[in-house]
Image (cartoon, rainbow, N blue to C red; front, side):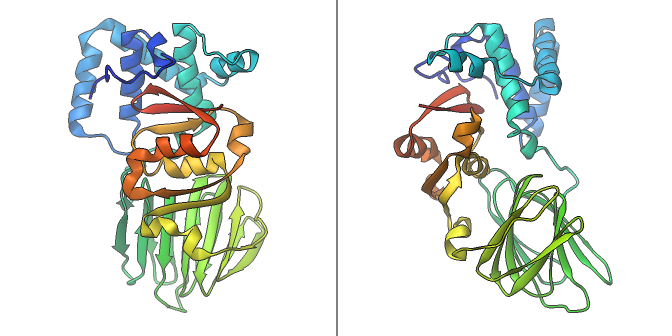
Length: 320
């Protein structure tokens, strides 16, 4: 690990950071990634010990992580379409983006999960009852089977469940505040955030409960629930909605913020949308996961956006 001398873009956005701050932000990204290599842990501790300024810079990063709320660069961009900010403002802005945007929180580590995938990885696991789970990138889940219940907790990410029929022991997937229950069926759960969990049914039906509310969802339908309520079922094409299983991401009039959250499961580093209006804008895209390295180029060609590389691990996306 270490700073890449070629990471700045044409706007020299990241170049306004002093070298130690660059290293501190990059180390913070590395240590809070989906998986942290032992070598990176050792190198990080050595970096902290090497210079008191390293420890001070990293402490500032952690402080901003826990307390920052507003992003100065966004305010500046509203006043002028140019990105001219000080080193200190940029340092705070980058970390505020991590906190305020919520993108990094969604990728918190779950060290006690039974099954995990790294960014860009797909994996199929067979559970104790012979049900299978296809896991998308950056996904973590746990299974807790008893004599009367088959409970799977989806901690983060997306997974497709092919459930072995067993009428005496329901199969339940818990994600955020909701539970999706099936006996023998095939369905997908996409956990973007606690307020954005999407369930898609490919075969038969499931029942979904959030608090006192519940809903039945049949094959060829999809709904989204949040912490407090369940959305209205919508008819969809499962083949398109679940294209990630075949190596494609297909977004049909989806909010750009949701698209970016999905893309973050499949590429190294984090993309963050800067601005609520841009995050809410509906977009239609088809992404080939075999060419994940071209995702940024695809976005820039298809949409009126500006991509700014802050570090190799953090990229900000602005409205053009």
